[in-house]
Length: 376
Image 1: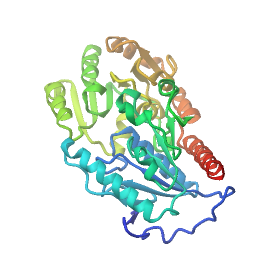
Image 2 (image 1 turned 180 degrees about the horizontal axis):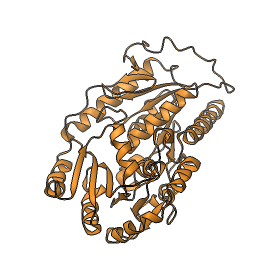
Image 3 (image 1 turned 90 degrees about the horizontal axis):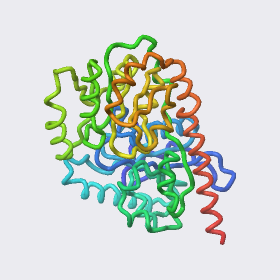
Image 4 (image 1 turned 30 degrees about the vertical axis):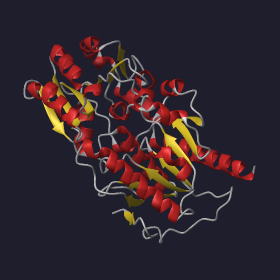
């Protein structure tokens, strides 16, 4: 079980030996800030939450000292700074976000020497950079259009941004304090290659309109294959309405829904699928599920959106198509993709170890820049 930090005490970190401060210090102390809506665990559907947990686990393995600020009940590797109960719906989101940020700031200002750096994965905590006593690195996981313009136009000397793909970085090139790109990664050792694929297609992720699982349903029907939809419907009314309107009528008619799959269920679905379908209508900045499918030797068929062409090597680990109508013909060619090539690409480009090394280097660049600013 993770240690638990109380907002008004240092309990939870007392067993960790502090390393001396200074520019030559090897071990870092990092607070990760999660999305405030839901508790996080291995079964989280959101890519940012999965990436945070993978990165935090790797940093712990590397000997660093970590904590995660997240909802009560979250399962993390280091210590947990619990910020309150998960929201029950979208109408509670703003209140939950305010509570989440307030508790983090309270803890940090009460214990300003506890962490070297805050790594914000929430998409919003960075707005409080001027109130935070330690530097903030904010990873931007979403397309630019998903952020309020005023959030990105302001600039604080205490915040630094990074992107998760070159495609995303090009759209944010004017952003103040943009340090560069760190591609997401996965723990490939948790996935095994399935050499013999079965006669079904797979769509996996958050069930919402912009992710467009309804397009995957139509493509699977045209291809004449069963489709498994695996994921989670978040407690937003418009997500639930979309699920009832666009997904439910197809269930049991060539489509099966696996609600909030456990990790082993997810891994088995990925391992044996004929192909994973990515049908998002948003300009996606990354895709962990594509990396996971390739780690299982499963081809990925993706509509040409955002960073998908950076992840899927067309003709080698899957196919990039111009629209969802081209998916069935790509499915017919899925047998030409070698599982070993899919796995090789993940191990070479999208490993958790590579991601952790890259972030370690970024953390140290941020801290070095802060020291220079303080000395000026």
